[in-house]
Length: 380
Image (cartoon, rainbow, N blue to C red; front, side, top):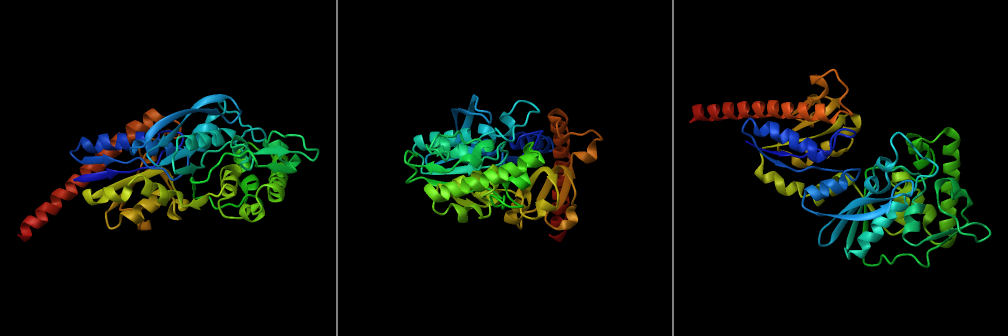
């Protein structure tokens, strides 16, 4: 029996690589031959998944969400770089339990993009999950050479709390991106502004109070107007496109730079070579921290199942709100059914239980293979 173990991360607990490895060790204990392919969908963990699939890790020094220098990693091969918000200036770069909705910046993400440009790649994939800021991508643009000015012509540091003071944007000294294809890999469909936009929908998750949300909304609207007047004549239209609100507006900034937005799940499955692994396996094991109704609407495990068909797909999750009767997965195994403890922030217990789930799946697969061989033997 040969299995492809291709999960997403268990957010807050284990990376996709750790999930895949623990399941694979359990499967191997029962004699199942495994190939691991840690996955991502354009969110946090995208760089790690790209490295696990064979791209080279490349360290670079960038500003974290609060502007402090730290080392982040991008993934690189001959033509492509994968750059993510999460490990450059995302929530994970903030001090423990400290959110900064009005001062967190996307500047470090822009620095990582600039670094990738300097490596001479032809394509940069922008992974936008896990952001800490709602600055409309102004920090990203600043790192690429854009400058921002108030009504008196004075320069402004483009932090979220100051966006409503911006009246003019100067792109005359911006980094030359001609010849570089920018791809936003994201499944977020929110526009930049409005009731479903970056401020209203996502800023509260980053610590914004009601009054903060109103100020952020006004600032994002002002930023769009300033860009429309002086640096990006399509800014108003771009701000309303699906995905412009991703990562606090980094999607919008990327669109202003000429990026195109694609499905994160599908793009990363292609980038990581998922389809090429299928002919050599008899079952696929995928999963994520929580399976819910959103999973059925196109999140990574569901896309894996659709693209693997007719190969059977087993899902493994921390917990689930759906069952195998959904018709997408042939079976579902969860960590939650094996312990009363909350494993969402307990990597040690999660890893141990995933190993045992791997063993159970391996026993199940081996028994099924034995029965199939017995049936074939009687027919002969």
